[in-house]
Image (tube, rainbow, N blue to C red; front, side, top):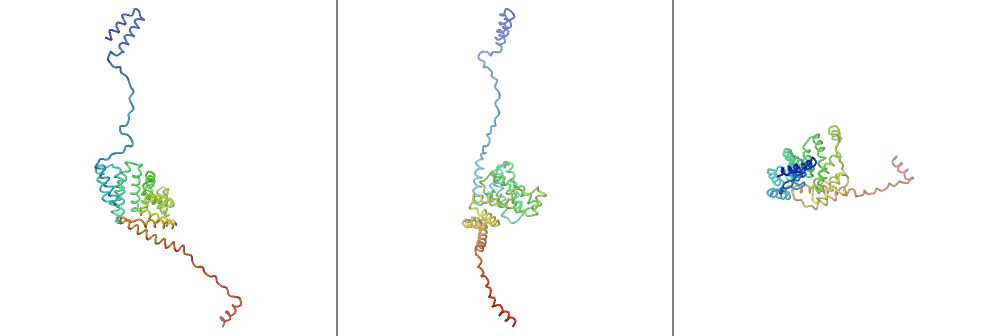
Length: 326
């Protein structure tokens, strides 16, 4: 049908102009869609969009959620070993679970610090470091993951020799600062930062020389006053924590702030110990309070005034000399 329209245009054209017009009309007829045929429209391709929106929390399966609640309840009841076992069960089914990883790291370090045997300490600290490193791979900027890494490094450093210990203190600096920056509501992060700052501020001469020659310098941030301020933040966030009270009172005592130390220790007296560790810390606080109160009493007690010597009259000196000559 379209070809007939095109031929008819050529026949009807009487001369070359009409012939050209007929050719154009026939070509237009060929390009025009037939009746009932839809006209094609060329559209630009739509930009590709991600099917998974960003910042969407991952929903855990019901079984994992039940174990998370179980582990949290065990931790709140101070059953750290049982809670760690539950988190390890979660990691068997979900090896990249962020919450389970950093909580397992913290619990491993906490359990290991209770042992006196260095072999068991090292085993728990190493396991905690592995959990912490895995959580850091998932969230390099996470406050919890950086706190877990810093905590494992700080406790591992207690088992190292001098050089490795100073290197560990240097490595954990960025982690502990990032932990307080991203999780300012975590009192344990402020406590760890304060401990690190106080320890670095009291490097001895050999530690400072080694840090400058081998590690590129003493880590920035070591400051006793700033350590006390950060520990005050931890104490404000968790005023019922006996360990925070003891650390704060001890730092204030060493820095000459006796009255503040006594005030903190009196607050610790009102906190009832729950665990055996709390009982030990409570006794240490009591002993420190007794020592500080005695020192405070000695400082407030004025020495008695000594009477001035009375000079004898001038004429009484001769008889004394005569009697001595006799």
